Length: 102
Image 1 (cartoon, helix red, strand yellow):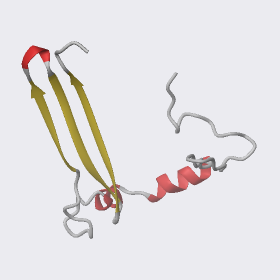
Image 2 (cartoon, helix red, strand yellow):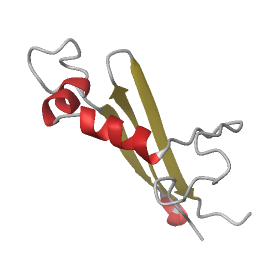
Image 3 (spheres, helix red, strand yellow):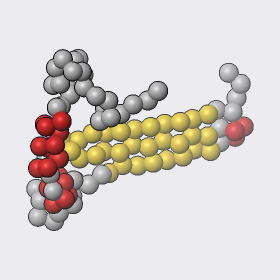
């Protein structure tokens, strides 16, 4: 069963426990972060405000498709997503099916 990190309760023994790749926030820490953000600060972080330092750093990417003989087909894409002033995340996907027997 799939679960989201925001909906999964943190362990009771240590709410801010850190494992190899997981950092859990207490409810107070999470609310402090959420309360400190405004629509303007989120837009500035995404580079959507003209006067922001990250102006022009919107999401950029490409998608493509392929169609071939004998049922060959594919779709693929990538997106570069700015995070704050100096970080970014890149997400890519690809799904293909070739028409020949394997």
